[in-house]
Image (cartoon, rainbow, N blue to C red):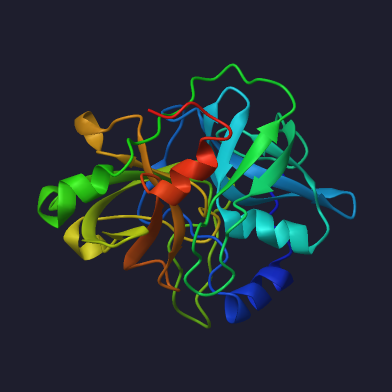
Length: 262
């Protein structure tokens, strides 16, 4: 198997100067076929295909991911991308669905990453049941008290938790769809902050999971509603998952151009 993550050297540079590019599942487990509408964003460089971020099918031909993923590809002059929904991404054998991306026009390129959203418009419909979106203002209505103790299910193709010892921390495992459960910590205008502290029984995301869904609920209480998408977090992938809300006016104004909102 030749699972590929975009140029390790370039990723290292991005981690130093851009803010973590894409976060991955930590302390989680392989997802198998539990979330077939979650896929990996793929692009081609110098004739080779690489996975870069995660995302979710939200209509039969619309794939939701993070704006900082597609904005980065745009900076490389890359316009055509693919999506794979295979449980394990293989650059040579995975089924790929071609499309073109649209980044939120007001995506912020500063640390705050305002409007960190993008969609991939697939050339053909995919026979997979799409995920749902939250109602406008859902988390404002729930408020911090209503969200206290609320769990979320993160899914993505990113790396696992760091291996420490014998040198700098190393991250591995990109390309396998994994699932993890996080718990609500804080609410603000654009983000939810979720605990992924393993010491408290939580898990979460790491490099490669950006754009992936954080479904409302976990276990028997999990829903098919994407509360938010993975956007950023702590550099070691062991404390906090910061996810971009999909119930805000700005997010829904953008998504309204591509899908039917609740």
